[in-house]
Length: 222
Image (tube, rainbow, N blue to C red):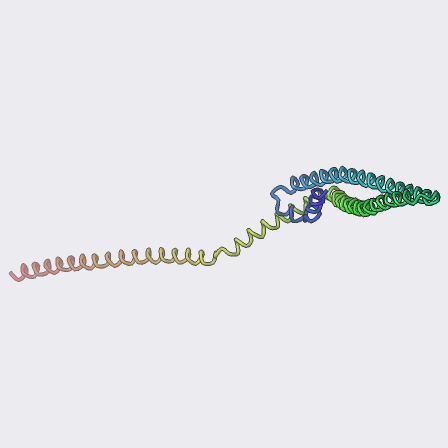
């Protein structure tokens, strides 16, 4: 009996919604819970039947003890009426023995009835929870899946919030600006180099003209 008490108590304490929320497959989990409940109900019914049988045996033992007590009381009275105090004393001893037995059986029967009542109450409570799980099976599974989806979405949102996209964009923009500045600098260097080359070329061209002019003047002076 303690085992089935423990099993029913564990199931009754279980929060089905929490179990489904944490399950990878809520429907499979709920089906397993329902099967466990059904097994516990069958075991409870079997144990209740055993306990009721023991209760009936105690009731029989109590009735027998009370009948024997009454019988020996009658014998004691008969012995007294016949002037047989010795037999009366023996009858009273037997009467007292059966009275003590009856008192013990009454206490055992009271405890047995209490145990049966407790087991029946737990069994009825489990049956109620079992019926509720059966009726609300689809709803419970849907709620569990919705909770899981919400949890996943929350995690994705949190990850998105924690990602420093602004910093990433700033770094990317800075890198692009550096590339642009580098390109402009290279272009400026290239333009500067070309200008210097042009200046030197121009100087070379001017000297040639000057030489030609001086030669022409010398020729004309002759």
